[in-house]
Length: 639
Image (cartoon, rainbow, N blue to C red; front, side, top):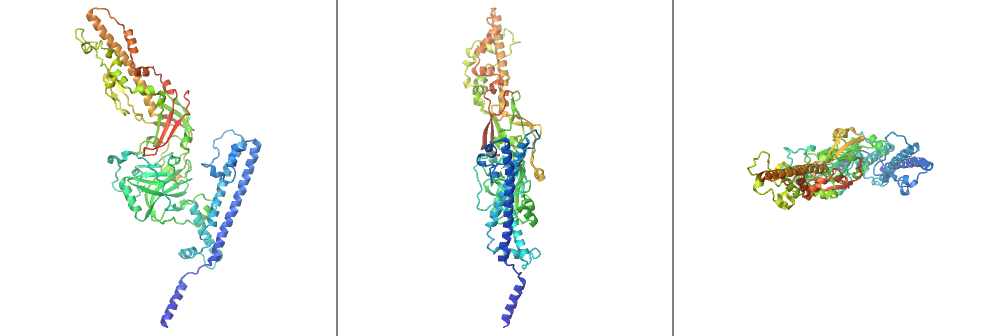
């Protein structure tokens, strides 16, 4: 009897301690219906707004007599519902003040308004689908547990049906707002878009590997060997030949620590933060010995805006803290475009590996080339042009141990014979054989070396083309250095990388830092005057000019040398001089090696200007793999 009494008391106490639960069947469906009605009203309002904009645009089209397909695209793809999906980037109103037709300006501005209205409409479609298909709309198991977990001061009284409905609506709105902002990480099953890049072999050289005295997370950006995007990059382009993938290289030791943490129940993520506060997570994966690959977020990068990339390790099921309800409702209703600023603390229990900052470029590679407006400066071997987005210093010069990953080359096949002559053995042989002796102060009764070994009359000396120049000492191909020949002559570098491409701008191109990111504004430049010095073109121009000078000097040197020898022979024999200086010069010119003749007759810059073509070559940073090789055709050669 006492035992039954104790058990009864125990259950009475438990029932008293457990909080009363609302009638969820009465609360939950009504809360969902309330949200769905607001979404339906918002869809109707957006459609009405879009209809008004379209009516105004139709009136202007008829008034001006414009071709409909020219303005709205085939099948009205840039006009009908869903039109915003066909834009690769957000359209903007023209910012330049100029005299223009008011109707055309209004039409352009209305088109921008229609884009935003249509985008808002489809955002409401997305929210409507989330509410309509939400798994907890008709299954109530989630709500009692969530109600119990909520502190007593923050949850409504169970008997207050209206307050409970509002509480459920608040939970749903925060969940939807968080999901819309891209805060939640991708599904664990999603694979990283791995790509097989050929990284620079110099990273395998132990002498080139950066050593860290103590690896402590987060690593500073200078501990990163290479990355895509690069830290500080001004023109990050995600329209590369291997789409959707980025990477980051660490020292093998640092990567091993990341892998250890990854295998300890954590998951590797890339967190992308827009300067306006929006945050997106993408999957990441380690690749031995030193690379981390990660997915690039889709439809996230906005031209000219700054971003932060963080690599983090977080517990498998970690999620961001739900923000304040007022912020959730603002995002839900479109009053606040982002919610990420409420997640400054990141994911619970995360370990930050490193972070870097960069800016999304304004143009794709092809679009950027179309913005060039300039000419070739032949005297300096440069291209002078103007653009509103110059080349990135990191692109041209690299950073840290990363070589430049944007280079320019000249199509030398158009003047193949000239390039062949510049580095021919017959030219080197002509410049150095025979070794010319000083004869001015040599007594007549003392024979010069050339007189002793019959240099005076040897056919292969008088005519270099008869000499065995093929067996002359070879200069290494693609040499980065100059070589000295006998007699003070020089063989310039033969490698097209002997001279770097350089860019001078009248406005410095910024290195993107945390400060740029924290400002939260787009980083734009006005039209910038640029002088792009193409290393290969400068090398070709300078090498041609140098060899022309050396050939002329060699002609004079040989003619004067043979004339002096003839004078000495005539004086010894008492016979009149049998040849004139001019005859010797004509003979020398007639017997010039073809390579020397080709160079001597080449007119600078005409020989280069004919069919002149420049290529831009882009590589993935730190790798040997090209992302683009495009021809530049747009320069005014006759400037």
